[in-house]
Amino acid sequence: MTDPAAVERDAAEAASAFSHPAVAPDATAAYGEHPDHVVDFYAPRAETPGGPVPLVVVLHGGAWRAPYDRQHITPFADFLARRGFAVANVEYRRGSSLPHQNAEGPVAGRWPETFDDVAAAMDALPGLAAEALPQADVRRVVVTGHSAGGHLALWAAARHVLPYDSPWRLSSPPVLRGVVALAPIADFAVAEELGVCGGASAQLLGGEEYFADRLPYADPAALLPTGIATAVVQGRDDIVVPQQVAEAYVAAAAKAGEMVGLTLLDAVGHFPLIDPAADACAVVSEEIAQLAW
Image 1 (cartoon, one colour):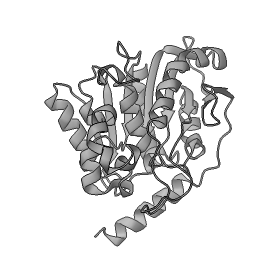
Image 2 (cartoon, one colour):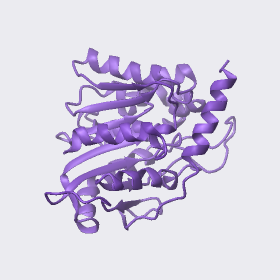
Image 3 (tube, one colour):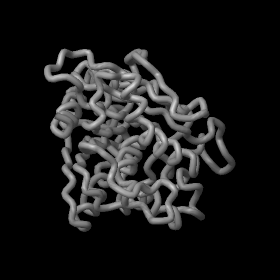
Image 4 (cartoon, one colour):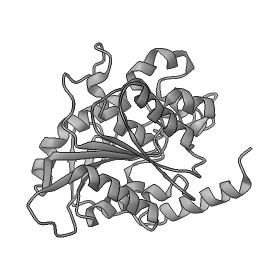
């Protein structure tokens, strides 16, 4: 049973993270025909010498479920813009907005649409950013994501090691400076053992009957090594996506011969990582800067 004090702290941290008003983008572009096929762009707010600045691609979390869209992470996107980055906040299709039979709420994600969208958005971003955000240097791109978005960030950086029959596989590594995954759902087997987000990982893959077969196409822990610089930032007090999930991913990377950085933050839960009012958010910005500049 989860400690009541931990639940209370998590609720307070979530309330703080979601208390900031949404920040309107400087530009929006479509990467497809669906209403969710959009990217919001934020121009750098700070003066930076030397011309174009690194582009940070943000993939929001919310357990891949429909009620959680990109709006909740716009204050974080604005925070990064105020730190001198160009920012692209990506939307993608998530699960149904209606509860399904035998589910406690909206089902997580859509197979294969969620993955179709992230792949399409990442492929389109260099061109979209060049037009919508000329301050962005598309040769210096860092992908970050929170929770379920952390999973998608890791997956986006691993498309060149997907199985050969995957429609999302790239023939060569994506042009990225690196990935900074924030409390990511990075190891699906461990996440399911722990019941992370009510079994969201299995739902994303279409249900328990498809879980094993689709795992090699979707689970970051199965898509290693990537050869792309990767850092994970995790709160030690996270009860939403516990640190065991991040540690399992880092261990899988080490077993595959790759070193993944893991920053564990004391007295930090799930939501301060994207809360501009929290010290943890500044740590995240620093991790991104180390890869981007």
